[in-house]
Length: 418
Ligand SMILES: Nc1ncnc2c1ncn2[C@@H]1O[C@H](COP(=O)(O)OP(=O)(O)OP(=O)(O)O)[C@@H](O)[C@H]1O
Ligand SMILES: [Mg+2]
Image (cartoon, rainbow, N blue to C red; front, side, top):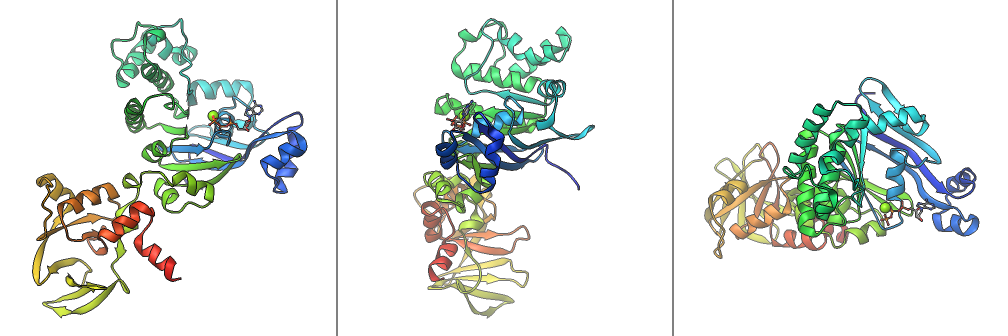
């Protein structure tokens, strides 16, 4: 079966009330949370949630208050018992284990060695020093004092709290306390980190610092992170995948760009409406595809095939037989082609935008970088694939549609003509 994710949730369901099992058939019939609550007084916390974490990724769960995020993450480490479903942990030696079916002994092992959790409200021990908070999990693991203090100091340094070892939590700001919580969670060296809105109480600048800290930890230590937030920009910044919850159900899972460009329900669309797309959407999504009917053949010359953009005869694109753009001719003058990143590194963009040079970017270049390119040149930005073949062109209309509609101009055009 190849490589599994670190954790796989299969149909995880949690119902609160006197007889949770009796509600499962109603969910199977397709009854919704509100209906069930009205008719039976039971609350559906999570309904049939399935997803898989890939090793080393940040998987974000998003949703409005009450949509079931905390309930779901608490089912994963069995702080609460799911009513139905499996939570498969893939262990390198022991193979697949179902956390939902595990006994107390097994759970203790999982919580001290495999998974740790960071809570929204710090949850530090007030009477322990910073260092002693951080090494708490290592104490439970039975590590000796010298070893755990070495590790504790290392992880404190990693979150920027060197020198604070002997202070008490009340002497620290909220952001610093949350760093201690983070150091404590990573110190156990468990592969999976569960984080329930860990940064929601922090002010925006500190929040971004903590996000960077977290990404660093995830990359350096190779942790797999399940992260809850209700802040979409946070989700987009740190998430490799995002699952959106509505009324206890996961309504969409995708990477940030998929969620932004293709929201599957109105609820998801409302969520993404105000998101900043410039760090998420990629060049290939907004580009006008380099093909008919957007581009028309305009003769051959010197071994190159020329094309013009429909309605813009003044810019001619000369492409070789490999599909690579070799010449750009603007009003009869040849323009230079530069690499976007190199051009921006080499030259400051000023009020004067170039008309004699344009830039080429990759298909996965983010919109923000393309915009910087457009500040450098008045000519269309060229998008090329990994084989250097031209695949699209980004001009003002594409940028405007990308930012305002969060989708490609060509897609919008095709949808309008369909
Ligand atoms: N112990 C409980 N007993 C009864 N109902 C509960 C319990 N815990 C949660 N619920 C219900 O389950 C649903 C999901 O709650 P949950 O705390 O998971 O939401 P959330 O998405 O984490 O919201 P928030 O963003 O406000 O933290 C809610 O309708 C809530 O009322
Ligand atoms: Mg919650």
